[in-house]
Length: 368
Image (cartoon, rainbow, N blue to C red; front, side, top):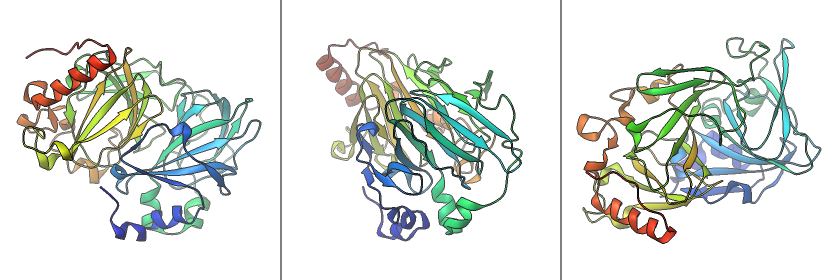
């Protein structure tokens, strides 16, 4: 798979090509913390863009570094951004045009989102470099406006998103079920590796998962965890969902839904993409590609997904493609986009059990 030649003409592709920093491309990358970075004048630190095939022009990503005792330049922008700290300690200052300023501290695996078009500045408060990954929907802004000055210098505040609330960047306590999804309204998560999650067995044996609604965004995400010796059910959805490995090791299988639910049995094994993952790995399934997450490690697997799919602020281009708000956890035989274990290609289980044997782990998968 590759980017079509015409993609180079989009506003976002032209902009990142003009920034003079590395652009890392692929279905996935083994460790974001080890990427080659270069000085990026716009932010005042080292950085690199990441272009995964599955982003397909609706999400974007970059990794940045802040030197010890230094700070990035203040910035604001007319797109949403979700930031995950990969290493280091520090703080972020956020303010709007009305003087409402807040500061909060963070550490490794903290997650937050500066409200759209607020000014913000990240500060390294420690003795080691800070590294973070940021996922944005900048391509939508650049492809439509095609004007860097407007995107980064628009003097408008969104009071419905941020108005200087004192507890804005506290860990949220509002958790509830919406349809079949577990929601968590929070603008800050102190540690995504230890955050409490809710049972979500419909997506797989022993799966726990919570979707966070953050900073009034359409760009949100979820944290998922599943046990040793188990794997998720295969499913597919639209483009742009970026998945970051947090704990354990394993692999993910990706194949186009055009190949059906049994890619091996139908003779298409060579068209199934396998990506190994571990802490710090990232991948992004293309639109309408089945993908299936496997844990081969000796501890529960946990990952972070940053994506669209807000239940509070849904996007028309996403929801109009769905038959049901919960179709990603409904079996294909019932009109959904997920393959129940009993309906999957038998070769998937065979290969998983062989992989577990190599790692000295016993399968805990249910029989059917």
